[in-house]
Length: 537
Ligand code: ADP
Image (cartoon, rainbow, N blue to C red; front, side, top):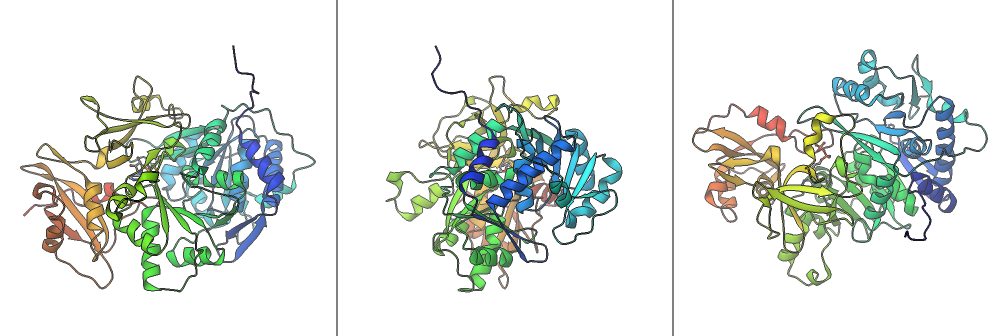
């Protein structure tokens, strides 16, 4: 016997139709490269997304064909986010910060048919042109209306649509979007999202205990739309009808703050380094930007130091911490406090807030060590494994990476974590960042969080460096705040309050800046390379 309910497919068509029908008057604002603000509405985005869908079909887009985008966050990228999947294609967002070699590999591996690219990003395409063969390339005129030779104008493509667009018949398990994870270990790996996974993820991240997004909110995805669906936020904003504000190519703290104040943004999401920069700007210029009273900040993608969460809080900026991965569409957890924790002393509350949180509904987690699943005691660590309806079941066309899934169907995240008795996850490290000293394991994440809690420290990363006696020892690489200095000895003494002697980095290197990954996280692989021949004194 089955239930007697309709078998209604979970597709992005329903999200696009909803925003078009109910939220047409709501604005979508995009900052252009020349810093001007381009204003449109969901009514226009809806009309143009359907026109784009039809035009792409006329251009020969078949079921499952990949359409690559190389774009900043803006309204036209939002059009493609909906048009391509709703036309039966696969939206393949390309990370514009990758090298031409990496991009060419990814484009060829994905078999991309078409490309939509910003005029200002055209030089990236020119560098890989000889290595890839798109059938057609459309250029989005964000500052210039001239189209380079051999390419076509995106605006003209949209005008080729005629009459009413008919959605193709779509199954909820059809492919809708695709994103490659960075290739720090092995080649870049493609994750192919289905309509169903995107819809369920959108519902899960919109919940009150996740991002709590409402129609009346104004959402600024600082996270790039070229990586991991910008945490699914463009789909969420459209589903609830919240005003969207896009930064275009302007990611510096002052530009973000000006946009947040000017548009009265109420929810903005980015990696910790973004909020570190914003915090510094706010502290240097008190009262300069009048931010919305109910502004919340989504923070994730890397572990935020507790000091950052506290400092933002003290300025009235509430953070929502979450953990995720490209393979999870990408949000997997959210760090809300439970009702009975709200009365706890501050220190205890922050100890929970800096954890990575509870799994979203339908996401199951376990931590597994060589001895098997570890108990949920908040201390025993193992590899974090997950499963659920918006977790990848394999990589696209990469059978050699099948070992990232266990025989009993869990995805091996490559993160090392403990789970506490309340179910909160604590990411201690990525497997590849682990420091194993004399057989004992040291959490670089804990050390970094503590170091960034010192008033003189702006940024810190702790890496493992080979050691003749202990095999590996931690080395701290630290950036001081402007106008501050501190000695390595004083920093080590500061850590001595919290850590056992053998856990404390033996040396501290002071540098001007830490290297960043393509999405703004600290790039520890580069630091490990830089210090591989380090001589311990
Ligand atoms: P990459 O950073 O390799 O390009 P992802 O964007 O998919 O790929 O990053 C996923 C990884 O980022 C996770 O496996 C985890 O190590 C790290 N990460 C994400 N969110 C958090 C968080 N809140 N705290 C600690 N680490 C995080």
